[in-house]
Image 1 (cartoon, rainbow, N blue to C red):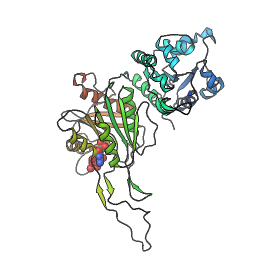
Image 2: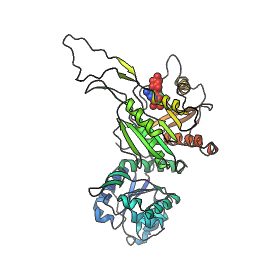
Image 3: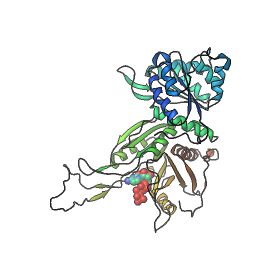
Length: 440
Ligand code: CTP
């Protein structure tokens, strides 16, 4: 089930879905479905070329609303102004090279480009085209212009294109476009924008839970879904970073413009994270690596014994990837290293006591602390946390979407990368400084 738009309990946000004339127009049908399922009211504006790929009846049936395709229809309602003004969010998918060229020039030669000019809502463009078109200097300049104008332009995905060829140019996954669009709406609703303050930065994020094989069919693992790590990767890319996501056993769509390296075990995770971190500015260890692995891997499935005895499994400790990164960094201040702490309170101390000890033990710059008592966080779309840093008081991030928490983490990272921007990067998601002794 699709998560409802945050804050949309009473009002249904009005989304304009512009569809450009590319073969990926058929994927916009799925995107439209995701918006309507998350309680958005969607008006589809297909270009004339888009209607060559998917006809008006499809858009009308899926949106449950009339399709707006012509400046000359319902002229008395002045649609080229009204639709833009009424929109809470404008999403264009696929955004073709031609459409982006026209939008970058501020042209208003059809209903969609007119709407882009009249709307003051956040605009998200999801490009799709052949690699050569995406890489052409004209398109690069148009994308830069659109970003300067405040539009969020996703990087296309890498993969199979229209013909037998592959490369960068695929429409990002509709689920990812949808998640990014809701994120943008939520940010703007909270009075913040999505700036490109991580432009030029190389970021590595790990996500998911590693698995340590026991025999050909069994493994030791954990319940991490990878959702928080993927939200961190998505939001970092949105803020302009070049992102490598090391994903352990996740089944989530690839965030737009993010390079994913898939791993299974803690050792594989370590190899990929260390390799990707060589020239990184930031490493965020959001993954939940298995702390123990079986000493030996059985070559055949371990069978139940006929006498009812149960096998015992001897375990060894896996490497601590985070501590290794901190040790390798030595006295350098780069990369900025962020750890996560999944904690439960116990007789020996509160969640925050354990987290403080972990921050000291691991030596990272920032620790994002989740209270996982009762499995509170796993697999849910929302999260709350406390951010701990050496020499700073704990910072409470209230319950909200995992994207909202990710943005607060990036705000803090931006301040660590460039301390002169510390004040500007003060978290703005409604967080507050928590009392040191508070149990989470
Ligand atoms: N971590 C790591 N390598 C491991 C285990 C954990 O890099 N083998 C990282 C996690 O990605 C996270 C941080 O260390 O950023 C804390 O993970 P957590 O599971 O909370 O702590 P542990 O180090 O496993 O300590 P413990 O289970 O004893 O609390």
